[in-house]
Image 1: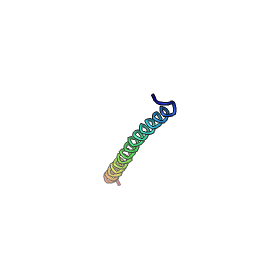
Image 2 (image 1 turned 90 degrees about the horizontal axis):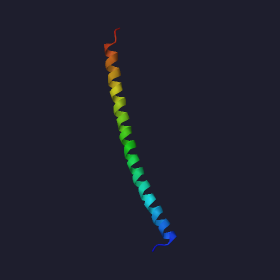
Image 3 (image 1 turned 45 degrees about the horizontal axis):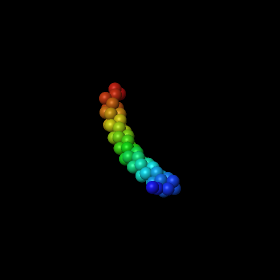
Image 4 (image 1 turned 90 degrees about the vertical axis):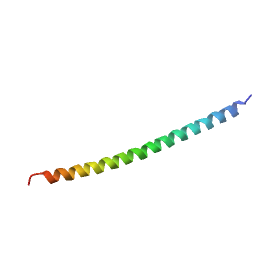
Length: 57
């Protein structure tokens, strides 16, 4: 049977592992979102340039 202190340490360790995994997933998602924003910015630039070409002068 574990002591209360040992149980607390196990609980804390499990929480740390869980939070680290969640942080890694969030970091991956942030990287994905940044890439999507970069792609979107490039598409907007291309569309803007195309619209300027067709603008009457």
